[in-house]
Image 1 (spheres, one colour):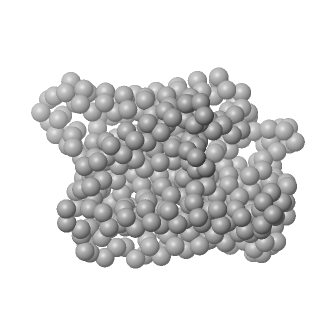
Image 2 (image 1 turned 60 degrees about the horizontal axis):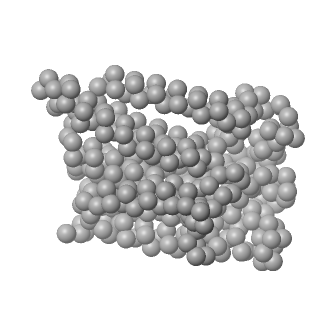
Image 3 (image 1 turned 90 degrees about the vertical axis):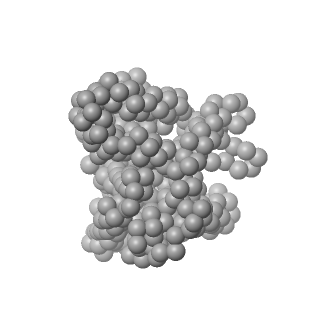
Length: 375
């Protein structure tokens, strides 16, 4: 397999390193007090993020950058099957780890990780390979093979989505499920599949979401809180209330790094799910705007890489990675400022968590690889 020797998109590389650097800075600021209190060291959480997130993520990202793109396409099924096996191990007694009522982690020895984060990347690689292998659905329609189109595209797609959905629902991890299904349906649409199939997928997704909300009170509480954040401010509305206080108190310029108040016991999960609240409090409107603009630039550059890709696999994979990173970023930010209900989706490159950071760095490596191969 020949490795392409072209140069990557340096603009994307710069944006990525700026985002990663901002993540290190704000995590250091956010976690100092908690690290000191729980571990006796002010930088324990930061060093843990570097050791188990950034360093392995950069190593994997470098590998993904230099590996031939054909390697990912050839072994896409194996990648997905391996991750699905780890998804099943979550439910094996002694291996699955439950935190906050959800079983989403696998523990092997002293090492634990979240398979659903690796599922995102492995599934998008598989999806890109699957789409490119089956060709454009438009050609099938031209041949008047409607039944073949349904059997070779819609049914296999529905089967794999249903399997993934079942595993994520059992954890439960509905936020990740929604993210994966949204991106998958979007990819299914852009390859020019029949509109009725896309309508069926969207309708099925909406009905499934409503059922999941109806059967889980805490999900319904999130919707109720979203519609009226003033309800039960010391109960179900506490997190969004404190998040809005943090964002609003930052003003235009912010209080300065390390000078935020809400992270000191007021804001739940200040260095993970709610880290944007702390970022907004300490860097203000200007800092928040800069962060959002950086993600927007990332989106534009990623879409450009996708449009310039030389083959269907690279094009679809670049598009899915870009949509995944950007949608995840804006869902996190939107939930923190009350535009969307609160979710457990982490802020890419910024929030604490080794599993999601490793996969995001690997994804950036692949994206840069595609940009290199397009030159």
